[in-house]
Amino acid sequence: MRAREYLERKGYKILEQNYKTRRAEIDIVARKGSTLVIVEVRSTADEKFGMPEETLGPRKKRRLLWNAKAYVARKRYKELYRIDA
Image: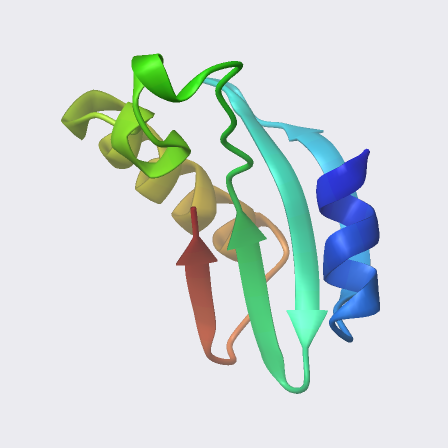
């Protein structure tokens, strides 16, 4: 997976990949320094379909936030975390 390799080159430590929750899947869970990072991998085959970040609609954003909160609660994580998409 190119996203994983990219993140590792940037100094992220990959903790989980394709982590499944009840409702969906988290593409990558990583750590950068002391921050937990929930990563949503987006890509498009062609720019005519828009930029990858434009493919993340309101419903997907809500689901991503729900999944991040579920992951943090399940792992009893108490530190700072962020969502990158």
